[in-house]
Length: 412
Image (cartoon, rainbow, N blue to C red; front, side, top):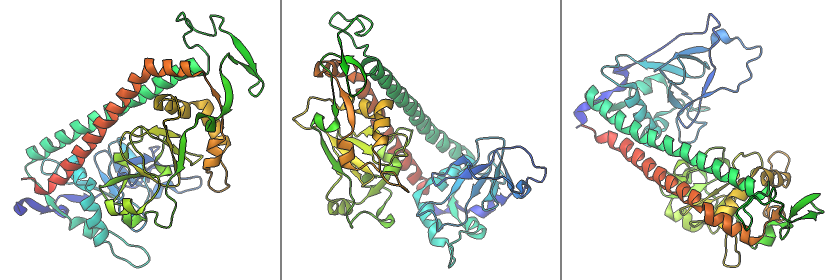
């Protein structure tokens, strides 16, 4: 089997194009997620002629490996026909694509084993460098080009299904928010005759705190009035360090893992069973809600559908036996624009905005009559069920992707 392992340097070569003509092409950076991303660097007054040009189907990597933990910044450029990258990156390409498929090579670079190898082979005192010579000395299995393309097609089929599910999940979230706004912001929930409440002349009363009318039976209060269990994530001295994070194990979410995309624990960090048992706080169960306490994060909440551990930058909200509020309703509430503004107004801190638990409990909100919430949940909880289904599918598909990458080492 080792007979098909080849030296990578026999298949790749450096590219040396510079932006000497000052072409107006996108400036790109590399992320530790092994993707090219639009650069946000301030280039005013910068001599752009020194920047490197990278072309479609080429690669680039950052040779300095001591800044990114265990990840190597390397990516396959497919976003544009041409792009600019910093001089700090090393661009290269496959010499003969009929012998080595670039997408197959990128699959090899995505393996955590490659990251560990590159970190081990890095050298230097002030900075550790994975230089071009070491990159060329990488060995990998190079089966027939037909076999490579077969593997790539299998990988892309899984990847595309995950992307489709992510779009569906986003659409489900948008649909849930639109319905939530219709019912609980615009007060157009169905009345006893099934007609929109406000436009059908539903009974309204004046709310002094809000300075407007609200449906009769609704009250203005605070989150603590909902009688939820709210607890902090881990913040003890036993909080995991970078060396505790591993490629698989117990999912561990940090506040910085919340963003405007769908949060899936399979894209996050993992800790060992031993490390998990050391931690005493922040354990979720199915149906819990995690809230980011980081004020600048776009996505504030997501509902868990598996066991997750979390750090101090996330808070755990759990429905207990004493409340009548559904997880689906609360998830919509926390992600609604009005309540986000209330949450963000309750953050504290100067350099880093945080949302302490006492501030979260005291956040103000309009509390609908429980019958309206129950009707909302009954009618639309299928949206949440579909959301969970798609997330579960993506978790399984992501595991399948990881398995496919691991099997590259034994390909024949």
